[in-house]
Amino acid sequence: MNEIKTQFTTREGLYKLLPNSEYSRPNRVPFNSQGSNPVRVSFVNLNDQSGNGDRLCFNVGRELYFYIYKGVRKAADLSKPIDKRIYKGTQPTCHDFNHLTATAESVSLLVGFSAGQVQLIDPIKKETSKLFNEERLIDKSRVTCVKWVPGSESLFLVAHSSGNMYLYNVEHSCGTTAPHYQLLKQGESFAVHTCKSKSTRNPLLKWTVGEGALNEFAFSPDGKFLACVSQDGFLRVFNFDSVELHGTMKSYFGGLLCVCWSPDGKYIVTGGEDDLVTVWSFVDGRVIARGHGHKSWVSVVAFDPYTTSVEESDPMEFSGSDEDFQDLLHFGRDRANSTQSRLSKRNSTESRPVSVTYRFGSVGQDTQLCLWDLTEDILFPHQPLSRARTHTNVMNATSPPAGSTGNSVSTPGSSAPPPLPRSNSLPHSTVSNAGSKSNVADGAIASGVSKFATLSRETIAWDTFLARAVTN
Image 1 (tube, rainbow, N blue to C red):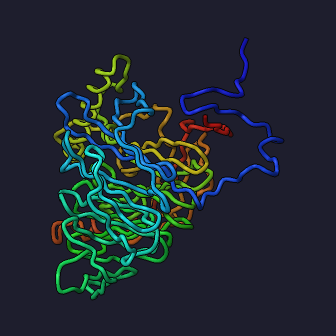
Image 2: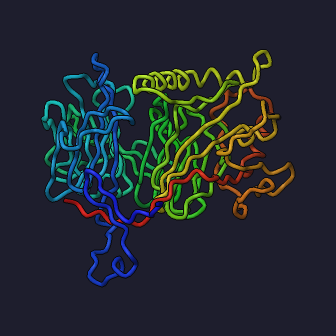
Image 3: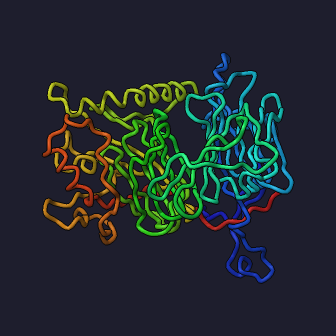
C-alpha cells in the first residue's frame, strides 16, 4: 500500500513533516537568517598514491569540519572527521585550500570569520599557523570571501562586507597599529591603495569596490582577471595584475550575491536578489542571457567543468562501480581541459561542426537547485545550429531579431516569463587586438550590447518540502 511518509530517520536524526498548526505555534523559535552564516564547501586533492586523496571542508554554525571525500557513491563517515574545530565568539564564513602546496602530509587552509579575522590552519597536522587581522585593525566587518591567488604559495585575497578587499602575504605580519594607505590607482567606482609603512606588512593592497558589501569574487581560469559582485548590483571584472577595470554589468535589480567563470574563461554567470541567473560574455562585454527559474534570491552559481563542450557523440551515461565513476570523472576532466581547442574549431571551416554547450547550476533561497544549458542558439544566435536540439533539459530561448528593441521572444510552447528590458552592461573592446579586427566586426559587437536572450529552465529543479530536523 502506497503511503506518504511524514517522517524519516537519517544518521543526523529524525526529519519530521510538521502540520501547519504545529509549525505556526507561537512559541516556535524563528529562523534568523541574519544570525546564521551559509554553509560553504571546499574541495582539495592531495595527490595521494592510494587513490583516495580527495578531501572536503565545510562549516556549520560555529563548527568547521575536515573529512575524507570518497565520492558520491560512498558517504563520508560523519562520526570520524579528520579535524573538527569549534569557535567561540565568532563563526567561520568561508574557506579555501591552497591546491598548489597540498600534499598527503600537509595542506594549507584559509578560514574567514564573521568578526573579520582570517586564520591559516593545517587540518592534517591539526595545527594553527597564523591569525591575520587578529586585533581587527585592518577591517572589523565580516569576511565574505577568501581565496588563494592562483599560482601563488603565499598570496591570498580577502573580501569583507565593508566593500573592501585586501591582499595578504602569509610571510608578513599585520603590525600592531592600524595601517596607513596611499592611493595607487583610481577608477569608476573603485580605488586601490598600497600600505604605507617603513617595513613590508599586511595588507599589501587595499581595494575599495563599489558601494555596500562585496559579496563574492572569483579568479578567471588563467588567473589574470578577477570578477567581483557587490551589494550595489554590479559585476566588475578587473585585470588583477594591472589593476584595470575590464568591464561591468548591472543586475536587473538588487544586489548580486554570487559569481562563477566558465571553464574556458569566456563567460561569467552571476546570481542575486533579482531571482535571476545572468550570463555575461567576457569577450563581448555584454549580457547574453538571463534565466528565470528561482522564486527567491540566488545564493550560489557554478559551471559544470565536465559538460562545457559537447561534440557529435553519444551522451555519457553511468552505471557501474565507483571505480568506473572515477574513470568517468577523469574523462570529464580531459574534456574540460580541451575546451579551448574545441571551441576554436567551431569557427574553422576545415573541421566538422561542433555542438557547444555550457552547463551550470544555481541554488536559491527558495530551496531549489536548477540546472541550465547554455546552448548554441543562445551563444551564436545568427549562425545555423550544427545539429537539431532535442534535449528536454535545454532552456528555451530565442535571440531578438535584427532591428528589434532588444526584448527577447520566447519560443512557441515555452513558459518563459515576460521579457526583460535592455541590459546596461558596458561594451569593452580591449580584449580584441587593435588593428586585427575590422570596423564591421567592432560595429557588430557594439550593436549587440543591449540584445540578450531570456532563458527559462524546464523541469530540472529540486523542490524540497517543509521539514524540521530533531537532532539526537
